Image (cartoon, rainbow, N blue to C red):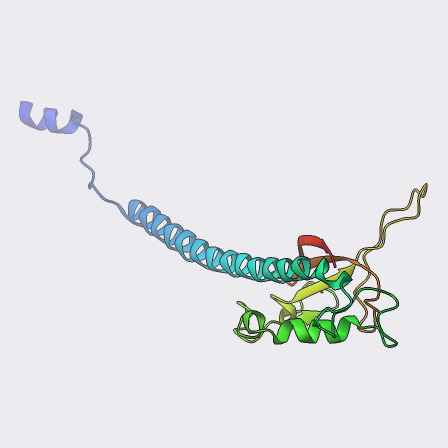
Length: 188
């Protein structure tokens, strides 16, 4: 009799692993898998953006290296200079210089990391337009007049922009969402 009374007063025995425990573990595993998958995807997209930035920096380095040389009347790249106003009757244009620049082996063989196609150039980044991902954007930096409260402007570099004078060029890329990422500014 005593034995039955002891069993009645003893705490009820439960199973070690219940259905609620199984659901909790399944949710944790699903969250862990989602974090790994999304983290890997975001890392790969960020790496593509960084690759596009490195390509834009290489373009800027080329422009900067050529900037000082353009003042020479014997500058060999007719599409990009010389920068002297009196050097020729037909001054070079940005369109011709950009075409020459992108035809150089270091840029001709470069790839847009998002599309795996050749480097592309856009007038501006348009958020949501996936065709612009990884595109280079060249803008003409126009400082405000002295004493003006207006900020400097950066319109897209027009194809017919004359290169008879030095210009300040802002270089950006379009990221995975086709939003602009400022890379730098170079005097050319």
